[in-house]
Length: 409
Ligand SMILES: [Zn+2]
Ligand SMILES: [Zn+2]
Picture 1 (cartoon, protein in one colour):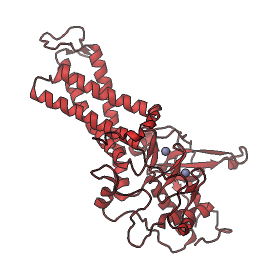
Picture 2 (cartoon, protein in one colour; picture 1 turned 90 degrees about the horizontal axis):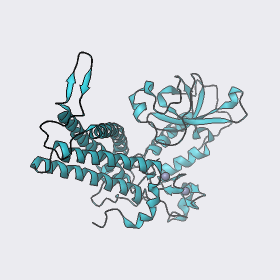
Picture 3 (cartoon, rainbow, N blue to C red; picture 1 turned 135 degrees about the vertical axis):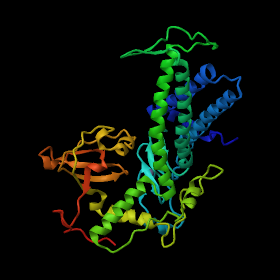
């Protein structure tokens, strides 16, 4: 009972005052209240056993969805303490420091510009919860992503069945038209409140929201489950990609082994989902697989930081892109997995070269140096674009050659 929204974090209530939580909570409220109103008033009255069970189920979905949503928001990802240092001072050489948090970045943590803190096992900053998704709230966040579509599917069935049964006698089909007579209440009405045009409009609107949520949030659930089962965050996927690029470029012969994948999906799953809701780690010390150690990843990050070239990877544009937020012509995965950030999108023209600094499975973030296009010297255009519009430049064919750079090892 005491874990029902952790009260010590309620000073974070201000997080609700942002467009993300306002929209998310509005959608939850509209879908759940319309499903409850429709079933109680018009579809499945409470005086039948089925109606009561349906009602209890709908309430349950709402409570579970809000419980996980508020926990994801208020429990937060867990922040690395200000001024944090490793227990053994000699280990500091393996770690990056954070000027803003005046300490070292613990393994797997990253500084979030929105939260203005170093976040434990940072995955991404989610505008819908107006907080980061990280170590402590990963389970709550993913449970929310599962429960919201399930609740929405239930709500959709109720909304469709209500509209269908209520409109059945009122629809008349002509040669070229469909007529719905909303003015007359049903002759055999036994309902306290007749199903009128407002009930119909509100049900239809809620149905649209519920179906949209099911698809969009359902996709996010599968992305997060992949993160959990591989024990590799969205940021770490990109670090690994850069590691492979660095090793290939310098031909160092190293093999980069991602250290946190425990080798079994079940073990990775149990690290995030526990009965207590608190993950199985403290967010600082991480169990690693054989052959790796606590600092395998941070050492790789330091090597990448030292290697200016690899901070961005060069890509060539192979397909035009208009800069649209959810482009329809770039495949359904690109459409649905659009990055939920306030950062800009960048228009692309075939043949342009892009320096990519971050990547998601279907999107990438990078910049064009406008110097090459006789714009103001040093001016950059930056933003997100679909991954399928670009192709990695291979070094053996590229004009750039590793002349001044030294091997880092
Ligand atoms: Zn920081
Ligand atoms: Zn954040």
